[in-house]
Length: 204
Length: 204
DNA sequence: CGTTAATAAATGCCTGTTCATTTATTAAAC
DNA sequence: GTTTAATAAATGAACAGGCATTTATTAACG
Image (cartoon, rainbow over all chains, first blue to last red; front, side, top):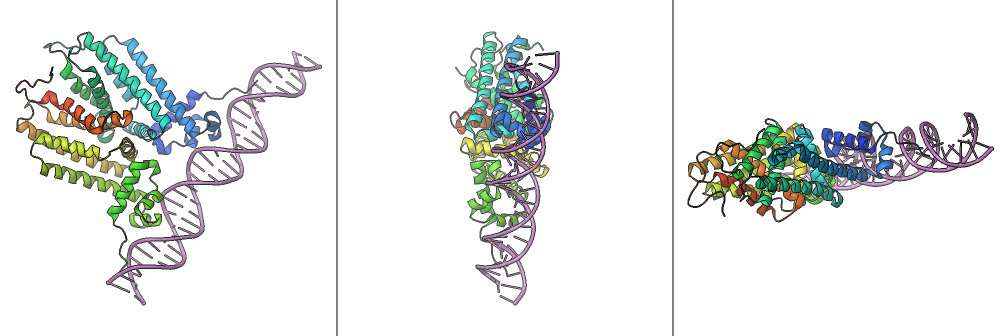
């Protein structure tokens, strides 16, 4: 006994993400999101309560997406290091253009002032840290890494390197993000590879 | 034959930087900056032409600050690696709190959409890259680094690591930025240190 | 007195939000 | 099976607030 919703919430959140990538946090107005989603601004307020509610839903979606990506990568890769590379590549190269990457990063930074949005950003960060740490530990157990490797420290390094590669790439825009990420990841991991000469641990 | 200016431009720009660190790009209004600088909003427009003019002047100031810091570090340090550490520490820890760091980073990212602001951000980036590269080359020449080190690649790595350490720290806020930066810098540089007395990259 | 800086008020635009209204769909009533 | 009432969703106009910017005015020097 009700009128069904014209568009799904997910459609609106995807539209909001597109607008964010295109015009950044300053341009993420209700009117812009509504226009992108094919609805009217008032609809967004009725759905999400307020603009902040929309942003919270967007952050929740990003948490779900991060979890889903982690699960997917784990399922489709056997080698721990290969899965790790895939995870980091996927998380960053979804933001294909430097503009989109910079805009999403600006959104992330601006959100850190809001406790609830910060909480969501931290959830993504910690989920990735856990996944990276487990993959590294798995790699160490399988002999893909040296046994002496400090997995906790290396996890932090990997996360910092990933973020830093994206940020510097958004700045200077030299080459592709995939190249940059691969280079920096290699530089961070190669000192911890087992001292087997002429034995490439990656088959891909 | 004119009325002298009440406050110097530099005072206003420093006030703008403070406001930026406190409330981020969204809160950087002319009224807020004017209040911080002790003038009236209209004054800012008359001085800088428009808000964009103020932002441009702020970006120019950051370019000058970066150059000055590079010159100062070079002057006061003899060891190339020590100078490098000092340079990176100073550039990041000027943004003392996670909030300030995140806000300035958000400002940087948002500016990348504007060609003229992007140009200034690139100037800072390239000036730092040049300084880092020269310090690394100097260190390699002095035997502080292995001769086989790819200075160009390591320069990129150092910049990425610096940015990444700051960003991840602004996110999780564990420890101090100085600690994080030192850890990541050590991890990035230690594989390139010369294989001297019992100073293996893996210390047990 | 002439010139320039600082001021204060006002203008117009864009923002998020609210509200009354209309539309669409389903459950119940006959 | 048709009609009717109920309910939730979508709409569009209106609202108030904050913003950058403009303008006219006042104050402070040489």
